[in-house]
Length: 198
Figure 1 (tube, rainbow, N blue to C red):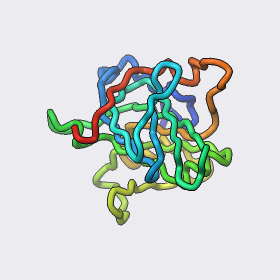
Figure 2: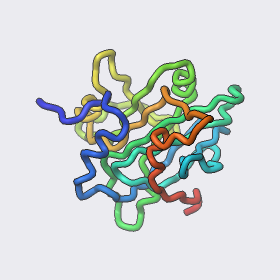
Figure 3: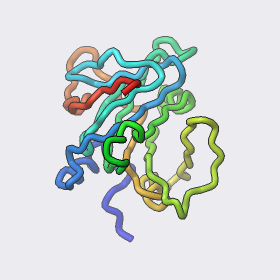
């Protein structure tokens, strides 16, 4: 089988290929969850908004790359991380119920600390194929995950298990405080911030 995409492709490469698709520009609600007390701030222009603690409900377009800042991580004062999120597909909830079914993106303390130590993490969020979904016990809202083995492409693995819809990349770059780095912010594409009560 020939794969058009790979997990090692740079942020935005897959989204640009989706730019010609009918999904391009669609707004998809996403709920980003961080460890308790951590603050999640979306990029706006060449800076970040104040953000929200614990979780952020935001509408993102399919295709562009979005940059976020994670701060106030418990027991790690001063630590800042800057993940990116790229939507490559969307969910299809009943009309008018889009905010009830956002794409869940969970940032764990373990991943944040691995990224802070210099590791680069790629996570592909996918909709499970009900015929192939593994029987994994869940506690509360914890997002189940499967780790790709060394040499395995996480995007190809997710495609085998279901339908990939988002790619989270964590680690690597930090902003240069001496200059406004437009490439770092990926031109800060527009999004829609929702109140948690919406």
